[in-house]
Image 1: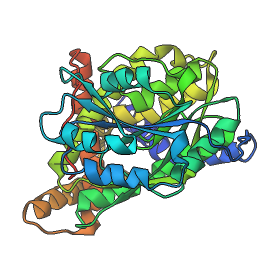
Image 2: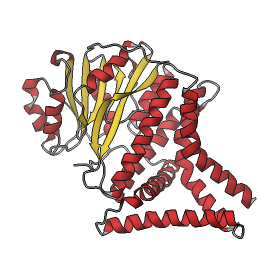
Image 3: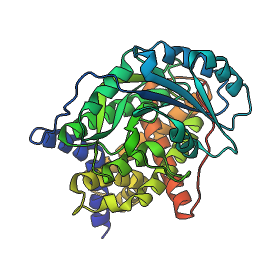
Length: 379
């Protein structure tokens, strides 16, 4: 039984991080569904959801207004989730340049704020962004060209993180998102992706579905659009930049919130897990979401079962490698506390932070806890 637990846990971990990564591009070699895009200039609403962003909102609006897209086809809107600082006043200063302030009272959270803003948006395409994200000049054009294909209901751009301080957790974040972008590009070749990049994603206005406030919109909104019969695609040439978090505690807190909302989101669209109705979508969700969230429990099973199998060289080596990996993560955490930025520890540290967050999020989800609001951690 112990041997069975060990090998089952090992195979699931290996499949989640390696097997799926190899399998998706292999499938893409044989099944291709290209997007029939063409250059066009539909009416776009660029929607920035903000809470207490007085330090960032002015620069963000200046950057958006400088993007390469016709101003008469671009509606810029800031949806303020009950901000208590000068965010709203700064946005009002841009009213003479066409920027719209949609204030939502009551601190209702990002998803509910977006729901209210979309009600008054006039664009055929809604692009969602955060106040700290920088878009490349042609990002809007690269996004909207995909909507020439009537099968496309949502488009995600490409996230590129920058790590100006060299923090190990930031290095881990960059590597993780390079991996995510690769997976999304392969999924799009086959048919559809199942989730978007939160700071640069868009939807066809007519396909938008209002969501409950405790649901993460950049995962579940695309899934509801897929449920409606559309496909969701990844546009690698539409690029946005964001600074990474600097501290493991900041990344951990953010990941707990994101994963908790994502778990509740999957439960909200659980019909998509049915492989008979949605074979490719359910395959992605189980392989790339559900199993990944369950990884910390398999890791514990792997470590504990391995301890009972010592005596044969393979199991001795396996336990030694696991302990060395976790010690490297601990060394990364300790060195960070002392202000030392040792990149060697970046991957073990980020891996453990994310999996610890998954375990906490799983517990919160079982207890029925909701995480609706957010605090800005990147300045």
